[in-house]
Length: 297
Image 1: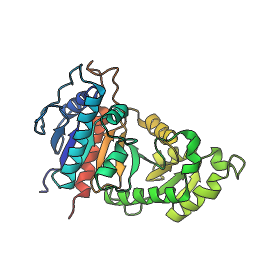
Image 2: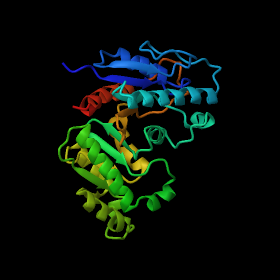
Image 3: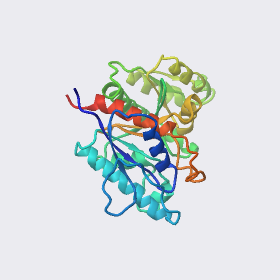
């Protein structure tokens, strides 16, 4: 019998709902994995599988960012040493991380740097829908310039490799979501789809570019294994409408799986005991599934 997968779970910003949703998610039923919880904030504390405790109300943002960042650093170290098979990260507060000296656009970029400056891509998963973002946290006015054929192909190849290795798909079916309404309507609404996205899709052997108002529906029906979305909100909106509260963020391109819930720190409801753990539990379950496939023979 194969050994149980080992997960490192970080609590995220200790002022937010991370500690609560981790505790609740772990109590929802047996998880077929051994879990190490990181990010208690106690100096000298050892990694633990005990339910996390909420942070003191007096904790300042810089201190919270340092606790969250150090937990992620330790989780990546454990994964790179082979002591855990996957990591699951709780929600972080980007401003707090920046105050603590972790100046990354998000955890996707931070984990990619810690893992050896590997090229990564962000995938959102809910049910049968998998969406990979070509660009992430950039202003909308800058998207068209950043969606180059080279970038689309690079992200598509990262997605293809992950779908083969982590999801066990022999021939992943990719679709490229269009940038403009109606995929540009023959240039009437912009030429980026014909000039940039169509050649990139052809190079990947992917369908598209297909209009955003239909491609995600087709993926939900099982026609595609993943959709490459040109910008953050078109991809995130599709995922959250399809499965709000149950989506999972997956970092592709790493030597180990990393998952996370698809929500933020929700500082306004932290400590009230009302946070929904569904997304965190989905992140834990998917991490176990991916860890099993990622193990070396």
